[in-house]
Structure formats: structure tokens, C-alpha cells
Length: 63
Picture (cartoon, helix red, strand yellow):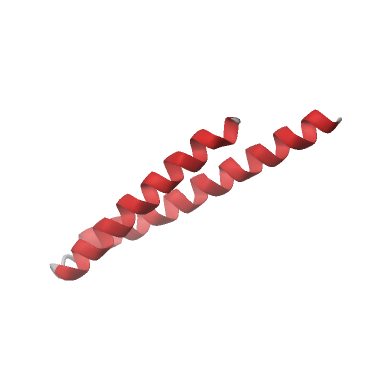
């Protein structure tokens, strides 16, 4: 379950990033759009880390 925290944090960052990106697009705020893209990418990486932790935990239990 150690990966669950990373997956949840990743989902939150992706959602936050999407919102920033859309607001930045609507207001023509390029800085906010860029921040949104960074947050989305950060969230995707966090989710992948969570997946890797879960895979490692499953393999570790089978050894």
C-alpha cells in the first residue's frame, strides 16, 4: 500500500494542473498555463512512482 499515497498525490496534482492550464488558457495567462503543465507532469510522475512501489511490494512478497 505504500504506492497508494503517491498515486493519490499524483491524481491531485494532475487535477490541479489541468485546472491551472484551463484557467491560464481562458485568461491568456501563459505563466499559469505553464504552471499547470508542470503540475500535470508532476502528477503523472507521482502516479508512476506509486505504481512502481506497488509492483515492487508485490514482487517482494513473492520472494
